[in-house]
Amino acid sequence: MLRVSTEEKLKKCITGACKMVLVKSIRMGDTVLVTGGTGYIGSHTVVELQQKGYEVIIIDNLSNSYENVVDSIEKITGIRPGFEQIDLCDKLSLDDFFNKHQNITSAIHFAALKAVGESVEKPLLYYYNNITGLINLLICMIKYKVNNLVFSSSCTVYGQPEILPVSEKSPVLKPLSPYGNTKQIAEEIITDTSGKSKIKGILLRYFNPIGAHSSALIGELPIGVPNNLVPFITQTAIGKRECLNVFGNDYNTPDGTCIRDYIHVVDIAKAHVIALERLLSEKNESGIEIFNLGTGKGNSVLEIINTYQKVTCNKLNYRIVPRRPGDIEKIYADTALANNVLGWKAEKTLEDMILSAWNWELSLLNN
Ligand code: NAD
Ligand code: UFG
Image 1 (cartoon, rainbow, N blue to C red):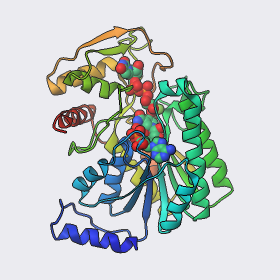
Image 2: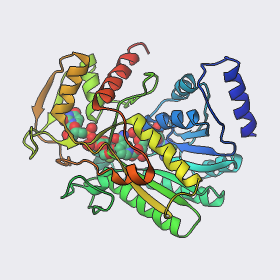
Image 3: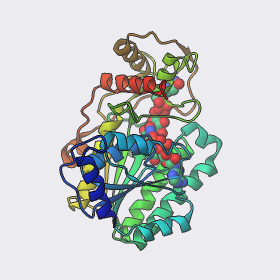
Image 4: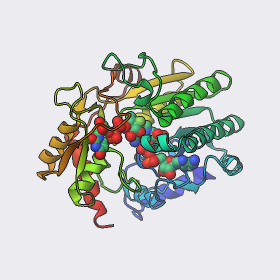
């Protein structure tokens, strides 16, 4: 049924009824479930999947995103993805969903709560949502024979590594937050489940995704006060926030501020399509594979601020305040495995990332 609907959607595009995008081939039968697909990274991934010809169905409970993201995805790609508002913790609704959509062959699982600080305040909320949601998803995947899973993990699993850059072989250290712990536990749950089922998984450990789609139709839209650096910078610059607090300049780094590996969200999104294709074409070398997604380059907080000021010619109001509890000093990725085995490489520059984030912030002025 869904195959027909894809053809209809494409026909609509070809007759020019909606904004056209070239879809070279439709991968019949490869319907991909994207959980958390109206969220920040999920929405960019849905765009990349659709532009590669995949049929996509999103599940999201809209706890941290808006349904109109589906409209924006349609504007960019010319194709409206399927969408159902479902909470992954609602086992019965999830089962109904899978029962209804038996042509799903793979899942990309983004849906989770992700604010590190909030997870320290509300650990049970994080363990309940992130772990229950994953378990319910895996139960349905086994029951309905959906055997391919790409999972959003995080470089938080490395804690503060002793050796940099950090590779997939580096030790997984005790997490500094319940959020980080949900990622470690989730990796273990998926690995154990894969060992006892037909599920094959690729666990992608993201470093710091920033930026927005070049259309400025989708981007990061945190609800409430942003926790992350780049949305705080753009919201300060536009006047929504008075001043950016830089958390500490007494770290053991060249300018004293923390170092991270910032990576464009579109590069991250493209890695998901490559990971999915690796699973679908059975090129994976083991039941579970893990890849770092970063650029391999570390930048300090002050370097990010300076890049913002350079690419936008705007001055940013900021001040140095004490360290934020739980922050690690520096981390950046060894990307050799992702480059050589996954066949993926980050392409966009820091300037691209910051400028696209700024264009997205500007576009929100009109909404
Ligand atoms: P996001 O909050 O923008 O997207 C997550 C989406 O999942 C939201 O739309 C939310 O409504 C939905 N969701 C949450 N719980 C749900 C549930 N129980 N049922 C259904 N939907 C639910 O976050 P994001 O930045 O796009 O992150 C996506 C994934 O990547 C998350 O798993 C996150 O932990 C992981 N990650 C993010 C970062 C980052 O810096 N953004 C870094 C590393 C890993
Ligand atoms: N920072 C500030 N001021 C702010 C916000 C952040 O100085 O207002 C600093 C932080 O102290 C840190 C750096 O900017 O040194 C980056 O902080 P973010 O909050 O943007 O990112 P984190 O590295 O703390 O964490 C992010 C996500 C996590 C994810 C992790 C690794 O929030 O969910 O990247 O991928 F797990």
